[in-house]
Image (cartoon, rainbow, N blue to C red; front, side, top):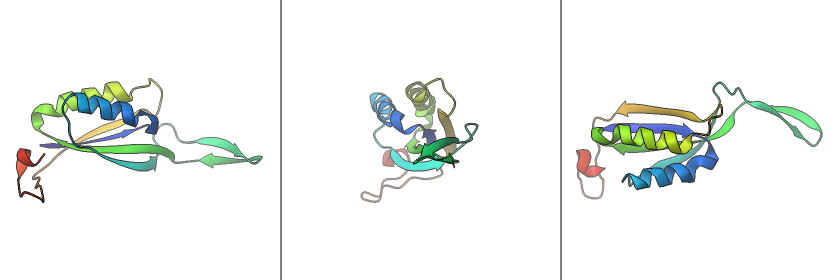
Length: 112
């Protein structure tokens, strides 16, 4: 089992959710986060004053998947979140040792 974490642009959230739903992924967690990579932020003008926005708004998605689904999930997220511009995001895949569904006590892939 793997935990797939994706950092994407906020306006791509619905597209990614739809793409994951189409391949049978039932549960995701979305968190509003701020960060920067190569984008390094930008400057904005507010009431005549210029200021630097160091951290840009992003959405962090997390989903637990079976090993057999990892490549499908990566492809779905990559295709749905891609704009071709800097700041499209990243995908991280980490191993999961155990998953437990609290309500039923199911463990492992049955708990996904």
